[in-house]
Length: 84
Image (tube, rainbow, N blue to C red; front, side):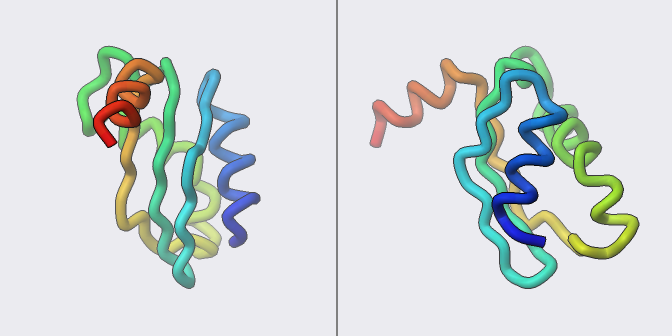
């Protein structure tokens, strides 16, 4: 599965989502995602939200594993960028 396809899929299912990065290595992916939908969620709930958008891709084995998910609210993302 191509990075742009993954980006479009996630952005279509998570409100006001901005996928900043999709790293694809074979059937493994890594993600950096910003969305206000992450506000107040635990890290596990954030992961569950993201993974739920990819359930069909896991089922058809076009994605085997997600190596990392870095999820931020817009405010957290802004702070992260200012620190760099």
